[in-house]
Amino acid sequence: MTTTDPYTYWAPTGGHPPQSDLLTDRALVTEAYTVIPRGVMRDIVTSNLPEWTGTRSWVLSKPVAGGAVTFSQTILEVAPGGGSQAPEPQPEVEGFLFVMAGTLEVTHEGTAHTLTPGGFAFLPAGSTWSATSTGTEAARFHWVRKRYQPVAGLTPEAKFGNEADVEPSPMPGTDGRWRTTRPLDPDDLAYDMHVNIVTFEAGAVIPFAETHEMEHGLYVLEGKAVYRLNGDWVEVQEGDFISMRAFCPQACYAGGPGRFRYLLYKDVNRQVEL
Image (cartoon, rainbow, N blue to C red; front, side, top):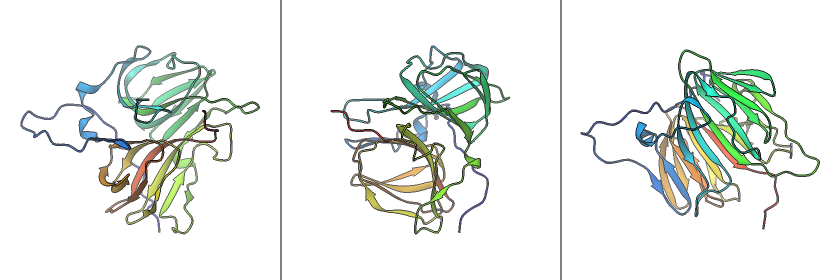
C-alpha cells in the first residue's frame, strides 16, 4: 500500500532565530558521519559564488580530511532573473541538479530545459551549460558535484526530467513501501555517480545495517525518521542533511505519521583507485 499524495520538497529560506532561543540543536560531527539539521541553515552561513548572480548558497558537504571525499553538495537560492552563464569552474567535474522550489531554466549545449519542483538535470563533465531562475519566486535547488572518473569507451549522456515521470523501483519483499526513483540508468556503467530519491511509507524500515564503500549525501525532502548511523540512533526531519563516510553502517525506521523521502548521492561503478 503506497501513498499517492503529491510530493513535497522542503527547502531552506534562511533567517535568524531570536536572541531568546537556547543554543540547542541536533548538529553532529563524528568519525563516521555528519548531521546538519535544517535549523542551522541560516543567513550567517551562506556563501556567494563568483560565477552566479542573484544567488546565495548553503554548502552542505565538501571533501574534508576524515570525512566524505568524493563529492560536494550545495543548496543554491537564486532570485528571479539571477543565475550563471558558466556555472562550473572545473571542466573535469560533472553535476546533478535537483529543484525543490521555483523554476530553473537550464540550457545545455544550446538546448533549454525548464525544471520545476522535482525536476533534475545530469550535466556531464566538460559540457557547456547555463542556469537562470525564471519564475516569480526564488529557485532553490541542490547541486551535487563530482570529479568524473573516465573509462575508455564509456561516455555518460546528459539527462533531464522530473521525478514524477520516473517509475520508482520497489525494494523486493516490501510491497512497494520502500522504493527508489532512479533518474540515471543503474545499469549504464558510463555513470560513476547516482542521485536517487528514496521513499519509505510510514512504518517501513531498512532492516539491516548497510555497510559499504559508497559515500552518501542524504537530504530529507519530506517527513521524519530515526536513522541508525554507526552505533547511534539519530532523529532526522525534512530539511536535514546527513553526510556518510565510506563504510558507515546505516539503517532507518520511518515512524510516520506520513511518508519519509530523501535525495541520496552515492559514488558507483568504478574500481578503487590506489
